[in-house]
Length: 225
Ligand code: CTP
Ligand code: CA
Image (cartoon, rainbow, N blue to C red; front, side, top):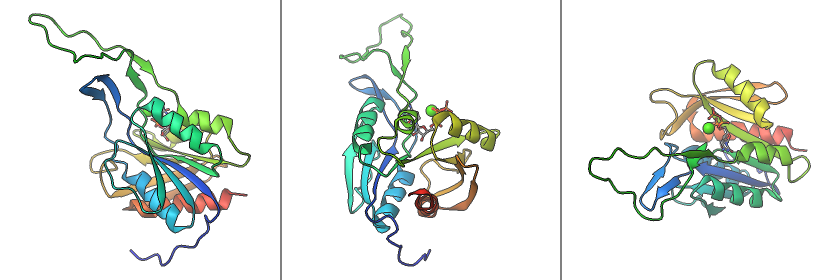
């Protein structure tokens, strides 16, 4: 793939990107997690560095090597990710929430390992809602003109679900993936439609996650003041 040298069209901009998936601990050895690999978020970080941005990458449980030229912060849980993203967003021009944030966490954390007991059924796991980081960042806008980008994996009526989610979250752009076999999770490739709050719809054909990342940055730079 040859797109030539990147234009430094994000020079002087601070972009904050979250990547990976949060893990919500149940006891010292167990957690609720998800299958996000973090690869799309890392592709966003690499391409943003290539386009001249100062990049803060908030990563959750990816195990991926740090992208050259990005400041990397680590978060394990949704609550930790929220803290790191809100702090970094304070002076950001763009915030991209590519991380898969667990919607729920166990209501209680057992400080000792949960053990089986002979002849006893397991206790149900009570869950509570996690904060919605994207909605919070989009609703608050730490800086005037700050752009906020979300991601969504959808099934069924993918575009209608995406439009509704874009409105609900209050973000400027929403990258919508259709999930299915071979698609998205852990793969090097992705296919998406990027929806804009301005009504725009940008289809991105199946291809490398870098190509989708560059389309996101094209749409972002067109909207930055
Ligand atoms: N997101 C977030 N905080 C959460 C949940 C999601 O910031 N607690 C962000 C994700 O990083 C992503 C976007 O919101 O950018 C959409 O995530 P998604 O799971 O599709 O949205 P939900 O509102 O959780 O909707 P659903 O019930 O379909 O999971
Ligand atoms: Ca969710």
